[in-house]
Length: 464
Ligand code: S5P
Image (cartoon, rainbow, N blue to C red; front, side, top):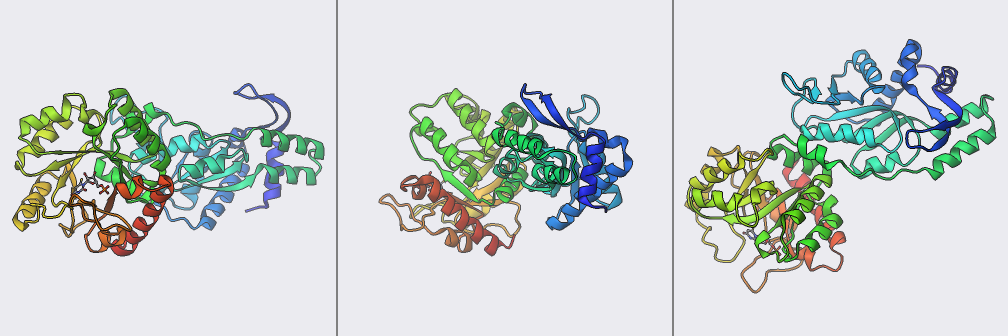
């Protein structure tokens, strides 16, 4: 494999690291310039970089199905790793083709496959994040990135915030150490570079929401499952507040802990399409689904109007809606038809059972009918609002409200169980939690507790 110090010296000799005063793209004057593109002209060095990266990959112990290099410099490196060590490769196009299949990702993969990202240099982490976003939008799971060189400008933290672990072959401080040790640069130059790095720490780049909105094309069921796994969360916050501004604020505080946010738009005193778009943008950025708990219950034609028209135009922003199956399957047909007018995946949760005392849904035949309906329209119906496990397969997500850690109910018939009971005894996948979080002193901290307890119980009981 060759010694890492030797490789650093070779990179220095081919001018992959240069010292002096360089004007960066950002306009900043930098005492170091790093350009690993030159390595493609030196096959031995190129291979050595790939071998060292593969070593880190092996040591990371991460299991994966494929590898994707970030264009362009990392592509030849990824190709060598894939060819030499027999690992399947994916390529993410910078632009979708405008002919043929319009694919963004080349290579074979299945939804939920685990893919490792390979990059040459990480500064802020934005290229890795951009690649991860496109792959995630296609249903792949991204948890780890291997980079050759870390400029130590906060990329590791930025990536961690997007749930990506960074593994690197070399840090800038190590490169400086080797070069000083071998008399290539002076202590003074090394200190200068370190100071520059310290003073130019990067912040998490804000996500380009436009790109995200456009690329989300995977079916909602897969997207839901991917979000749950990636964020290790089966918590749906029921944000039953009457002010949308307050919900927007809350969604930023708890967004990283939840897989879904549920609202009742008809209780909002300040609803506007502008504000709901803001909430939708946050849901894309922080990766959770938006559920409008509309509880539709009318004939097909009326629900079509309720879903698409009026003040709320629900279909335009809600990933999911809740629906009573009371009117029969025509209600699902009406909603599914309307959803086709939107260029994004949509779905619904059928209300099979309710948490309130004396609910008329406590009727075996009714529940059976709801399950039949869900199976018939399983492209649009992705799960149930339920109080028990209704199917033996995992095709439908069971979402269970009435969850509270230390309360038995309210004065109006609500009945509660704990997160563990909801999963163990009520067959829940997703916990819908409202006042337990909303009425707590520290909502963010409480949401985190419900996330952790809920997901731990989910992993243990469902054995996922
Ligand atoms: O059976 C049900 C179905 C739903 S969607 N029971 C429920 O409580 N819900 C909703 O879940 C209810 O409308 C409310 O928004 C939330 C529960 O809120 P909490 O404050 O009692 O946790």
